Amino acid sequence: MTPLVLLSGWGCDARLWQPLTAHWPNGMTVTAPDWPGYGDRPGLTDPGNLALLAKAMRDDLPADAVWVGWSLGGLLAAAMLDHLPPPHALVLLGMGARFCHPQGVTSMQLATFRRAFARDPQATHAHFVRWQLQGEADARGAYRRLRELQGAGSRATPATLAAGLDQLAELDNSQRLASPPCRLWRIAGERDALLAPALREAADYRLGEAGHCPMLSQPAALAACLAAIRTGVTP
Image (tube, rainbow, N blue to C red; front, side, top):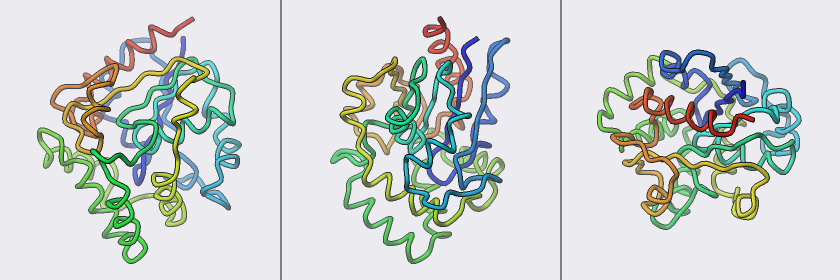
């Protein structure tokens, strides 16, 4: 059976994926490793070094799997294609070839956010959590669920979070994804306020009544979508 590997985004550890547990079909093999610097996993000496990141994640990202990267996790998973054997398929959830877009989150908005993070990381992280939930049909309910899963703050090292913001600003996978070495799928919430409208409309799967965090707002629909993708690429 082809396993799914679920990869979280900026400021969230692997507990984010727990709402999907009750919705997987029988026989599914699913892992959700933390990135270095998240949860109980030690950070890298150079958190922004993609070669070091690939070395640390090699055992967590096998070639016989489907990698599912959400938000920054999708940006990093695509970058790993230059450093690791490619998977059966790569799924980008709530992410394009790059993070910033003139009709989505602009470079100016992200630059403002990075300056705020340098001044007050904790308050800025809390603001980002609410920001990414603004497109959910029940944003308050999604926020409560996220707090239940993740707690009040981020279980990530400050250096890892700072490097993640740099990666959101600078990583561009356009060339990697123009001719990817594996099947590529894009999933977007129809109400994702962090994605440009054109990227939402171009997605292979669009999840109704979902924003940037469908694992919180539409876990059953997201699990069914990922299970269908996995079935479609199983050798």
